[in-house]
Image (cartoon, rainbow, N blue to C red; front, side, top):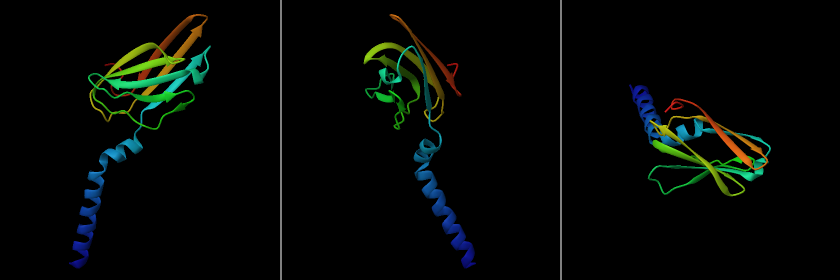
Length: 129
């Protein structure tokens, strides 16, 4: 009987710890991926920021040749701001039904002479919203 209560106590403790840190575990295990494919421009000239409608927070999710480690989790309308040489060149919007759904964002940036085009391809549960 003592062993039963020990096992029950340990199980309850593990569940309490697991549920109290579930957001941290989700963030650790399931991260958004940002991939940038440049043509005609160097990666260190590109910066991508993310924000949400009605939010005052803006997070740099891609800076030059590296993806930042911080994550931006907001449901609703998410806005991506794409910069080249610290000048805003375009924005994209995505509606996320849940803040914990993970996505892969592929930014294709093509620069020819004075023209810059950016395409965004989203893979994940909210890709067509």
